[in-house]
Image (cartoon, rainbow, N blue to C red; front, side, top):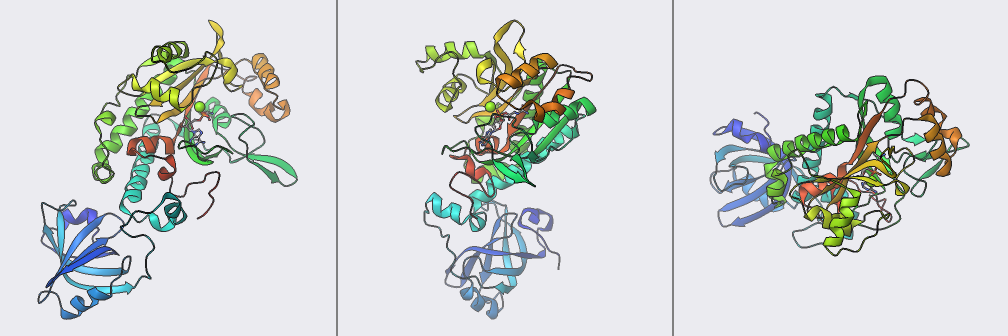
Length: 430
Ligand code: 4AD
Ligand code: MG
């Protein structure tokens, strides 16, 4: 018999198929028994009618516990009330394994309990929908760059130097030398852009974030494009095209998942280029008008970002931040050396910064000075300085945090749910 999945049932209407999965829930009412079967793709209601299915099946039904595994044969019937459009009239099933009492039930569980059981919680329909959306989003990320002439060049995870400041470094011993887990692939991305023109790197990045917030993980995935000859403006054009493509791809293909999450999608439909652009100076004025306390020179935190994003109907770019609060590699604005040619993209609905990037300093002399004033060891950056010795060109790029973006798309309360197995200050299990 043909093996189907719940998501492919439409191709088998009226036919008998085999499904392989687990008991999500079950109930009986007299001569009819209902089994909600989860097969990894979705869940479908399977109906067992006494006299129609063999007696053995009817009896075996009572042995099934939540999450017991089984293979099931039945006829695919169209059903307008079903979320997946079909139900299964069971002809037979075979038990593969009877599950022990399952710790996650329909009742409310606390977040600590659920996170401690993340290896099981992934089976529940909400986490399942989030991880499906994450997977679709990542495919869109890759498709966008692959179709736009970018070459994937991955950056190493063990690194000899800091990219994003020294306060969030994870240090490790590397055969008698000090090494750090990468905070960003950017510096390697810059080397690759000089070799390939347009590149992106994509992988896990690490920050020893000691604060507990809804927006910080210690391990998160970042995609980082870098483009030779791009300036700050071209960087923003790339970022808005990229976000439009990736968000709209998820909206088109993940209707069912967004419905499971009860996510209102009107605001996401709006994610279309061009996005509004405001300078940091304008952002400060806007915050003052809104009576949000702020002072020129300070970085924005979550309250400022939320207030700024509220003024716009789609993601907004904030550019030209005070140079003093930005990383050593950022180019300063030739028209105003107090500000750096950096840009953040803020997501609506309180999700804050999802993209950080900008134009890089291309002058060897200036960059050497910056490494010094930031107290970084020049010896670890010789290779990076070489990029300014041999055919240095203006260039720009950005990094987008996958979990931040997925938690915005999904409307999650905390970005830990956007990671299959999140790592935070007090969590390394499971
Ligand atoms: O703004 P960030 O620190 O920029 C960089 O790392 C640049 N080197 C990227 C580049 O230009 N190639 O980080 C970029 C993004 C943030 O906007 C945010 O989405 C995410 O990475 N991010 C985090 N996500 C989860 N947990 C954390 N602790 C994060 N820190 C940054
Ligand atoms: Mg940033």
